[in-house]
Amino acid sequence: MDAAALNRFLKTDFPQAAHFVVEDASAMSARIRLPVSQDDLRPGGTVSGPTMFGLADVAIYVAVLAMIGPVALAVTTNASIDFMRKPQAGRDLIAEARLLKLGRVLAVGDVLIRSDGSDAPVARASLTYSIPPK
Amino acid sequence: MDAAALNRFLKTDFPQAAHFVVEDASAMSARIRLPVSQDDLRPGGTVSGPTMFGLADVAIYVAVLAMIGPVALAVTTNASIDFMRKPQAGRDLIAEARLLKLGRVLAVGDVLIRSDGSDAPVARASLTYSIPPK
Amino acid sequence: MDAAALNRFLKTDFPQAAHFVVEDASAMSARIRLPVSQDDLRPGGTVSGPTMFGLADVAIYVAVLAMIGPVALAVTTNASIDFMRKPQAGRDLIAEARLLKLGRVLAVGDVLIRSDGSDAPVARASLTYSIPPK
Amino acid sequence: MDAAALNRFLKTDFPQAAHFVVEDASAMSARIRLPVSQDDLRPGGTVSGPTMFGLADVAIYVAVLAMIGPVALAVTTNASIDFMRKPQAGRDLIAEARLLKLGRVLAVGDVLIRSDGSDAPVARASLTYSIPPK
Image (cartoon, rainbow over all chains, first blue to last red; front, side):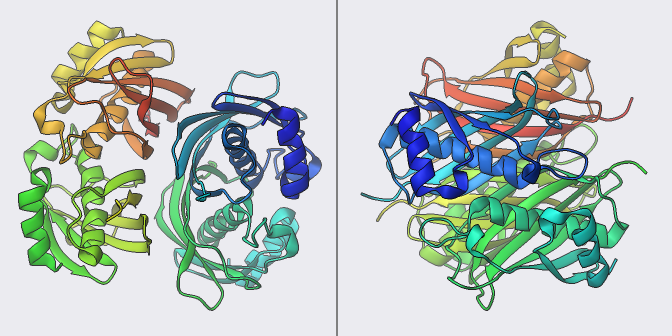
């Protein structure tokens, strides 16, 4: 699946992720943009932890779908996330995901999240997805 | 802070967590209820990962606040979560948090999430909070 | 398998873990003792991270074996560990493991490590084991 | 500190890590080689989890030391590791570490471990180090 097909799939099958934008999906990697809205902010102007978790989660999910096609029932089994810096105010978040393993039943990947236009990572995450049998 | 004071604090200072209910806050522990709504569900009827992440995050935050008082700017620095079972349909989620360390600058705790009325854990999480200097 | 059978199994099939002592193995739980030796210490008198990691790893492994019998090829797929306090000098370490999920292909559990005779946890860990098909 | 100084420091101040070889230490990154010996192997010919944990731990430690100089008492506070593939028999392990954050009190980094000569990652890890005040 390419970026356009992935964006359609998120909109139709995964409405909670409809505000994420798949910018790129290549071999074993994906780049996702989160246009940050007021709803995502916490006191102090930072983006909430659950929002960043959701962004990392979708980024790996999209990287898996790009490789194996639409599998709505793949589920996250484990995630570890480090929050390292406050995002820059008024900037979108960009998640770069890479798959490190794509097995028959498990996929493992990691994600770096940055504020758009900045090099310093805001958060990093690693996630494991369970892929249902066909 | 007791459960009533914590519920007031969440409503006024942390509106994104206003739908969580602090049921109990004792020495180094807290119990939080999430009345599951349609917005929290994913395809297949499961509660979304970000929602469970948010529940675990708030549960540790509340356990910290119960010990040290209202500190709006405590932030999560690390979280690890395992999703183990599908929650039961139509049941609230209950998070039981315990603090394992409450230092001057870092707090560490873990959380078990269950469907109300069930013993089998749906998810477990461990989190580290950074406590700002006074 | 009970504690005696598990100790024999570690000695014969898992010689790197021969210095661990299984003290108890009950339904979905296990308690393991590490008699701390000079080799396990780091500068400052603390027990090394890899040694504590190994203790947590064996504790979950033993809890799994106690339930399903000797499966030498079960492997750890994920571990997350928090180091919270310096162990007390000259004391053994005690790991208490509990299984939170024992599925057909994956087992998930967590572990608290304490210095013998102390309540304050030195470390906590959560681990996922992959169980090979029969 | 450059690679030669780091190797000397490991030998004198950190004898448990004396068998690791620092191959490179640049800005915010380090590459460490583990010459795999019989002691590091588990049943089935795989390298033990604690050995790979120790390799990841030293790789981040070295990357921190390369930036801030010899600080023997920096300690790991959190680690998350995914074991993804069996290492290749008879090959050294190579760990590539990168620092993602180097703050005043905390450093965060991640590590990829591969068998020498192979691209497929054997394990990934992310670690947090606490840096003692001067």
